[in-house]
Image: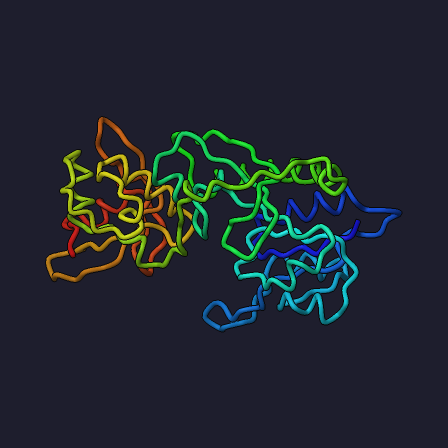
Length: 314
């Protein structure tokens, strides 16, 4: 069995490792090639940075492609594609190229939360559980039939990173276990109920902005007005409450990180401040760690000691 893996970020590497270990034959890797996103200039010096999947394949002398259609152009010998957080649309011609199609590892219980931000959506919506759906990819967004689905509890203090890592770690064993019976035709695929589909979108930096007056009210344990203006929360028609802000901060914890604006002194200088960590206490939002632009992260207590005259300002 030979695979092409389509993915980009570091957290999908355990899936690559699991496939490599389970299906290796006589020391030969089962990964025929990887398809990942092109290197991008990053940092102050704009050095080209390769994706973690690119690095993984390079170390093992496995072919690396940046365009899925290169699979066809190079007549690559592979039986199946495995897709996990690749980040781009796969052409129909590539989907149909493989004998067993492409299996997509999607971190939600489809048809709920199709799209780019299912983990963030489950946290912001304060769901008590989520899961992973392994589907056979088709031409529509996260629409294909379900091969396998499992559920995972969401803990009260889960962040995007903790929940994501738990979901993808568990996916490794589930995926590698189902591949043999799937290729043998022993698994009945389940069509998704499109009438129950909900959708998420790509998160932008401005989506993580919390209006200063809302944050100030939450710190005092006061209700926020119903005219909710945080776009990504408004997408899900969630009633604005103090605990929703805490969930929002945990959902945005890795990127782009929740942020607001603050007046640091009497000179009326407004600065951006990231909210790294928070928790709830007696129905009030408590800030644990913050980071002002151009500064290192500090505790909220340290920040208040350094800027005693500061107050939230839009």
